[in-house]
Length: 219
Image (tube, rainbow, N blue to C red; front, side, top):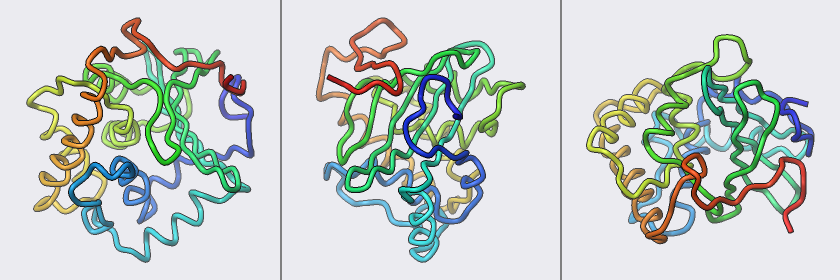
């Protein structure tokens, strides 16, 4: 069991997959899965190609192995991304964890559309920039930021956000020439999603949230 309190499915450490060609072109295009993007991202935006994406999708969505990406934080809550590969019911779960890993709670999920709560930009970058020196998981700040980018639901993303996402994309292999446009595209979609609920607040700020003890079915 890789996550205390979350023992659903055949979990496997997903962190080695981050260095495989095709990962980001599988992970990030879900941001446009609800059809609100003017143009769906393609593998070339991330410095990959279709063959890379197809080959890695067979690994990411294997029902016999559920990749788990741990993003532990040194001083505050960390996060976990779980590819929940149930046959006929594929999805992605996003969980927050206590600093000591003692509890995991699901705050959001992707099942063809995003449901649940998200994070503000400062909360997202706070987790990305504070890797734990002791716990196992992803330590590279660029990968941490992009792994958790689907959780961004901040109606007021700061001006520096596009440059930060651009730098992260380039760090993981995206072409420097097109990375700024890719960053703008992803952030524009996230901004539109956040404005669907003007009363939105993040789960870390005491706002409304969809939370369950990990491993417990939702009623």
